[in-house]
Amino acid sequence: MKSLIILIFTLLISISSFAQSHREEVSKNAQTYYDYMTAQNFDGVLDYMYPKVFEMASRDQMKAGMEQMFSSPDMKIEFLSNDVTKVTDKKEVEGVTYAAVFYNSKMKMTFLSEKDKSAEDQKAFLEFMKVTMDTQFGEGNVASDPKTMSLVINMDATMFAIKDPQYDGWKFIGNDDAMKQLVDSIIPKSVRTELLKE
Image (cartoon, rainbow, N blue to C red; front, side, top):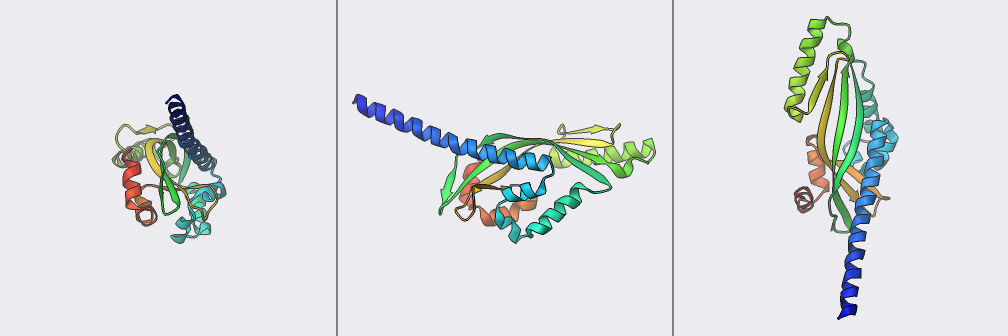
């Protein structure tokens, strides 16, 4: 009886450490992915994206789009921080393993095109943009800084981590409205439902 208890205890510890190891691995990879995003290392970001994303737009197109977005003469976008807050249990379907990653992101948008406008126009523009962003991200998650003509957006979001034998290591795909159709076509509904309810 005693040896059975020891065996069960050992098995539970090994299962929990195995479960922990996938969380640590996903969290570490996700943080690297976010660090690349913060540093605007787009090749690094794309290396961690789930390759089936490139069926929607090629890797080169995605990189060009990112470069264009982050080097606009009208608006400067910076990620101040991206931090993993939780990694769910994993779920395997047809040899592919999935987990959901919950994270917090802080982004700064500086409106360069408004710098030379009058103080009144700047104030009106910033107020308009804040109301717009409040609608999208929730009131209380958007702070405006009239001195720098910028908004800082704080958001909690999710993405999916995917370990597909076709590819090396964990890859990621954002879980947002822009990616919904693609996410729905790649990740089985049962997986999405179970992982996001945690």
